[in-house]
Length: 370
Ligand SMILES: Cc1ncc(COP(=O)(O)O)c(C=O)c1O
Image 1 (cartoon, rainbow, N blue to C red):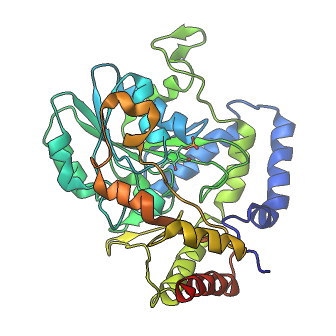
Image 2: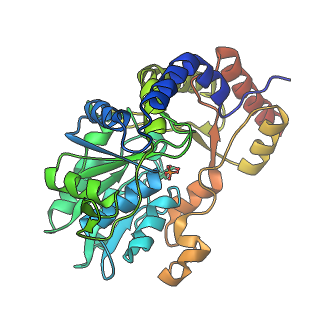
Image 3: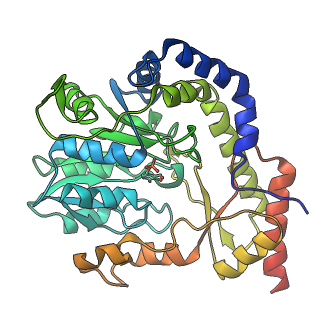
């Protein structure tokens, strides 16, 4: 049986094996495991790739969100708006600062936060909006920026964990909004050998304070202006990411080719492929379709050796840990519907045309046999 996996990290790693070995050797030679030259090199290169003035490498995508919010002074009494249809970290970090997460439903086709619903969720306590560029496609940053701009002191921090290399109207996704966060979790489009993340911004003062925040708010050795954390990214991981960064564009292009091919192969099947707005270039971190009888299709695909996944089965407003926020089922119909009907198919860059045909063939088989 043909196996088509969601990931092929082994095959990807093999492409970099010798470069990664050399990068590790260099770190072993200089022994600066924390704050070594590769950290700054990675920050410089990523700032260029992302069209930003400053990049601050941190310990994970979660810590990038947390450090950015701590640097902004978000805390108790503040409200932060985000989407309920995202990875948990986005809202989890809002809660961890002491602020209140306020959810706004998504557009049913792009799965990104719906800008037309923002105003109704805003109060005088709203300090921040966190759109998420879900599955590699940019949220509608112009309309979000326009709503945010109407309230003084309200900024936009973008969670671009899934959108490295994506663009909107020709601008890099990571260049949009006051600041952006990234994740280098191994399964991400630029995945490291362990945890990692980044904060990007054009604001000089914010960048400087975020650097302090990642190092316990230290101004000089053992002098702390405010409480931050240990949010540093190791030198070894930075060196490995630098080696892998070389192929980011090529890998993203392969994901886009795979998506275009799925578009052809799935055209006459009763599933809805991802809807990408004309102004967006997605990097397809996930290729998520909407389908009926999702759980039946998923079980069939697994029997056929096709990996697939549900991102995300429970919207965040219905999570046990957020029950004190007072939301209930039915509050965000588009998110709840997506959670019921969404299914991510393999899209990773190592897939062959035969793999894609196999996936589409298995979906066809499922719906014709019903
Ligand atoms: C949208 C989103 N935000 C935040 C994160 C958190 O990143 P990390 O797993 O690196 O902490 C992830 C990734 O897992 C993500 O997909």
